[in-house]
Image (cartoon, rainbow, N blue to C red; front, side, top):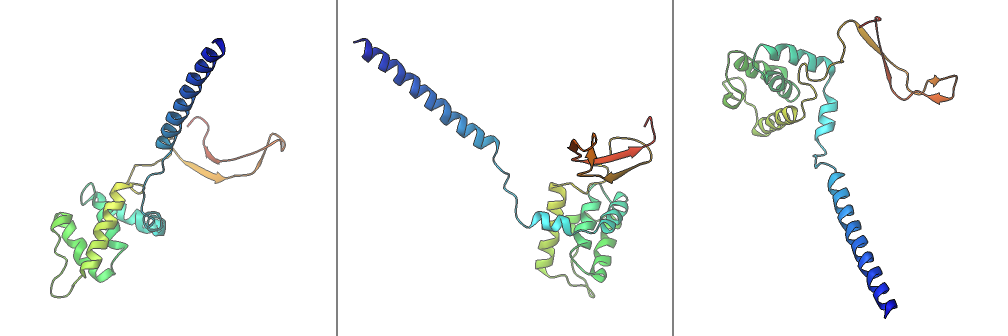
Length: 170
């Protein structure tokens, strides 16, 4: 009789451990689930030249809070002639949703309009290029140097980061 009681206790313990493992597995998989991101987003963001981003950030300040994204989406999608017509509308205060995409000289195809809207949405959803969003956490003249893999402590360990330099006391 005692063996049966002990076996029942072990069985209950085994069931509880199994339930905890299953709950732990589902919790771990829920916490470590990768976000669903389109495969087109990061190639687009990486393809944007830095000088174009800086130019759109500067010009966008005078247009609206999201002017930088409007300009960047337009500039990275259509040619300069079409850009000029669209950007002039933004500069006189026409909201992005009310832009006229064609006139006597410029006719932007519907596919290009959809691409511009999609890119603008991406730029606003992932604000990597939003002015002032990501800055160094110090004030003053600073610079950085990539010293990844350099020796530290006489070769006992390797450096795994980027050094940020500045005047002492910054």
